[in-house]
Image 1 (cartoon, one colour):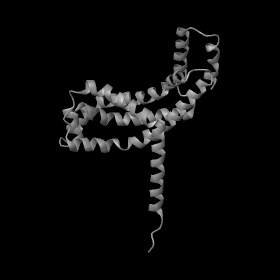
Image 2 (cartoon, rainbow, N blue to C red):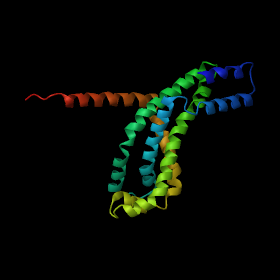
Image 3 (cartoon, one colour):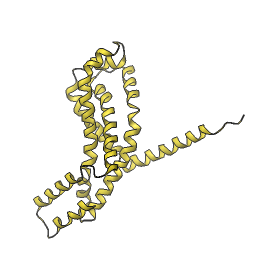
Image 4 (cartoon, rainbow, N blue to C red):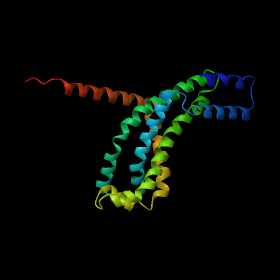
Length: 211
């Protein structure tokens, strides 16, 4: 990568620790913005999935005594966002590992390269989670009046109105951690295995049955 190659001169000649830290901070910032259409798609999809998941997750965390039926409803509401997040978290993890490899090729240590390449993996889900938390904080009032009073989501919103202060940042942190887990090598392996299994089941279901 051009950014990684351009940083090589900064490490020649044994630069001081403070200069090294400033260069690492610059590299982390430089690798943060999306560089091409693939990065933009990853940002939109990871951010969108985290924004979607942040809304039911924030409601669930804000209500300490969540009834079982309400917890089940929130879980079902979260299901559509999980495959989208997992699929694109794998791409985000691949890009992070590629960035770390490029940084190691310009004589950064493995630890420094890994920490520097984390900027996108932290920022993309955090942006989406913050947007989702903001939306539920804004819309929980109108939703509680629009939905029927006995609806599980309306009950959860009304009973969780006092816990937003700790639920909002906790939901964002959990989604960042979930994205990191899904984008790891283990998450990629499990995700690809599940994809193959679902494809086989889909093909078997599509085969014509003997009469």
